[in-house]
Length: 308
Image (cartoon, rainbow, N blue to C red):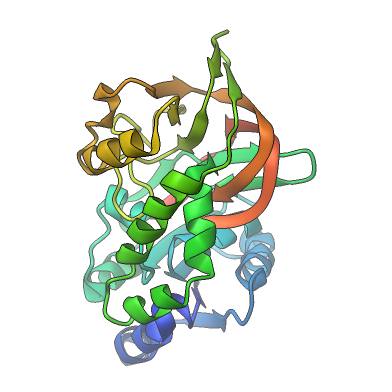
């Protein structure tokens, strides 16, 4: 059974238009048995997916098709309780779409839908998990502490982003906010402890992105060596750099070449602990949910089955 979960407001209402004009007519024309649920507020997608996943044992094939952005995919991931019997599929309609970029999901909704309905080529991929003193959250793409989370926080509350999204230019919002954050980031130091025994003190800590995939923030290849099926995660940690140094290095990250600069460490790990001297914004897949000074990150024990 195909269960479609639609975020109707993704990219300023594009999600709903895609459902009505490009997906629902195809399903009806081909007699595809399906259900559809629409989110109304934050947290709805998680609840819907949890209910579907809990019932997955009663179905021969339980396929949850998420229609939205990276944040919607993240919410869906929180709701999956049965990783063995639940299969996920994704039709990206967000502004960043870093998951789709790394997994080479077709931009064509028609092509994506055809692959999903065929039930061909499901693969298993890694999932990340980040913990604070009060919460635990999974992530599909990345979890970031510091600068990248602050940029996401600013973009979430940006009126300009909503306008630019209508013209497919939402990424410009992130760039403008990133420039501001480069000069206004809070002063902090951080200690990063990895499972192989390394303990790295990062004075003038800027941010650390723990990543399952290569891309974050709308196309920045922060972890060019990340492999979503190797059972490990990668980290891009930036520290000890001036605002000007940050702005000089940032464009190189589009090509994955930022590691040539001093103060940018590219690390690989299975578990990591980060301890900052001040609370910093924390995000999972672009969804900012709290400030934290201590976090633990690990590769989630179970893999996610997904149709590409």
